[in-house]
Length: 455
Image 1: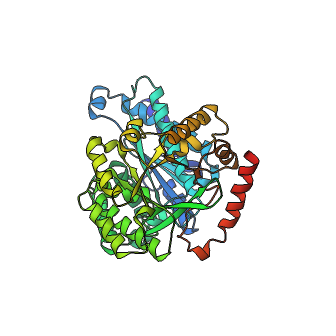
Image 2: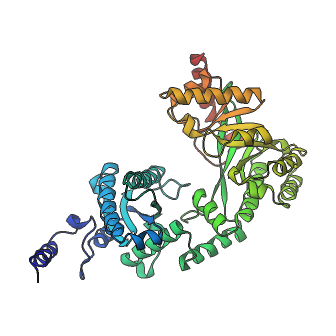
Image 3: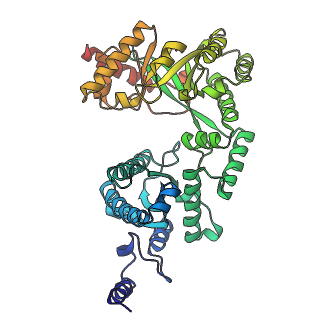
């Protein structure tokens, strides 16, 4: 046996006597010990909130065939980069462990806060997960040998949402890995079949709820309208709307889900005696469905206390619109009944001028990416001013989304933006009746005060 082999064996043997905590970062594959699982088990027994983040490199098979040395380098780079990034984003005590579970799949376990009622994972954790994915992809793009052929995907799963026989930690870990992998790859695995049955039950039993976030009139501080937000069953992977709608799309049940959302939302709006406009997200595919308009009209006929003019459809996934003439005809059929339309995410992604010019939405919602720190970046303020000016020329009303800071709101007041929406004004909640809006008096006074100061 070579000297190098002897050294490797001695080093491996030495690790057998180290503590689990000292081996939480990509430990060797011991026969009798699994340090990361031992640390996870201790956390779960303590009742801690632990989240599994799976990262997976999508790499073309042909690349690995013609370049066999790529995979070992990719694995080594990912292990080092993932550890360094995690140590920047979390305290050492909050990192439960890391492991490589397959050739191109890596897992990070972190402890975190309990999610709020409407969340699948805490928003702060979701942002860190997205930041990690972005950093991994940027790191790979900077490596000339990868030639931008790699893409990191992944998913984040709360361990408390996963069940296993007898509550065994190893089984729960493996089940969470399978679930995260199924979400990341969108493959029809046995776990995805289980999730599909869960979605079918949700649709059959109408097991969704709606929340609402107010859209504030920035001229007088009144509530202009409400954006309706969908939630699946609590303690379910489908509680968060992004997972619910993404999986519904994958399983070809998106239209059925959106039909249900509209019915549930309109029932709730009528029951709460809401008189302001309500904003409902709908995809272009559902909007063009031949039965969607009759469905909406049937709901309105059943709920005479609602007026068609209250309904504003925010069209999502606008990149799917290829025939603008046909879509304009679809919108006209709705408009003949008094229903209006909004383009959301203006200033980002697919908010093209062609969409606005040819389909003439009544409202424009400015994307949060434009509003965030608009007070610090002159280019963002210039873009915001240009959107507001163009909207006025087109007789469109403007809503600024994602307002979270006083300084951002002050820029809106200074530029005379008509409406605002975001945590600075109010968080999503159950739709309040007229008699339950006492808290919004303070918001109205705040808006009036800040607007007067800005002017």
